[in-house]
Image 1: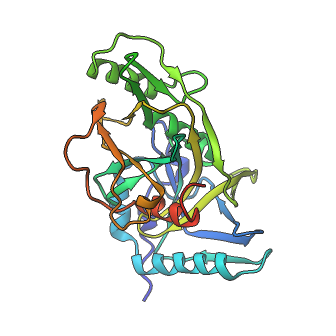
Image 2: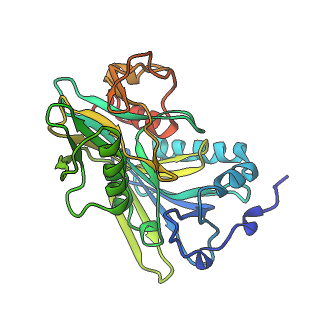
Length: 320
């Protein structure tokens, strides 16, 4: 028996200004088209009447309503379509008792060392585990601008500290956004550093994804983002977009967590993982850090988060 569509209880996009730094739209229908290679095009419509999450607190309400069995069937159908459909084939995923959050985007970063090491953050809320640098769209414009979400998350979450020169480094290449500026100030205070401009590090594509996202907005305009890794996953009910990237010249630097909550640094553990480690059920980092220093005790024992696990599988040896 189909459950009632309680999405009607969530606010509509037209009534949500999206000025609180978080805004996701809830999508019940995905159109898939098979591309060459293992590629998949996902088409969604984002209009004013779509239900949405204007703040992250509503995510728990949504999770309580969703029919996870229905979501798992949709996820399995998407995977089967990717694996079995011919180029040009199309299908539609839809269920009255399940939806996917959009937009979510992030970076799967690798440090450019002798043996490349994946940089992951330990997430201590559901889904618990080692995660890429990712997050939600912050406003209406980012619902179509996936690259803006991905770049912003990389810049805000991934920082570095050089203990030799007592300086911080960032991935921001242009003007430093306000949230990143706050994080830099908090880390300078925590590490007792003199205020100075951060060093800029390059973020370079390491592996181009084969997927494409096509967003049709309220005016009927189509916004296309190419070369993505797209994951349709039920566990965290997300349509997740990611890029795999290499951080150059980060050797000997200590990674920091730039995420802020309630005006304070989260300072999550940051782990550096080899390709072999990522194949394990409970991966152990080659090195891990917290508070701007190497971890002295044993690192958190946890699996990879869903998006990280899926990206690792798609990349095979996880090095791009």
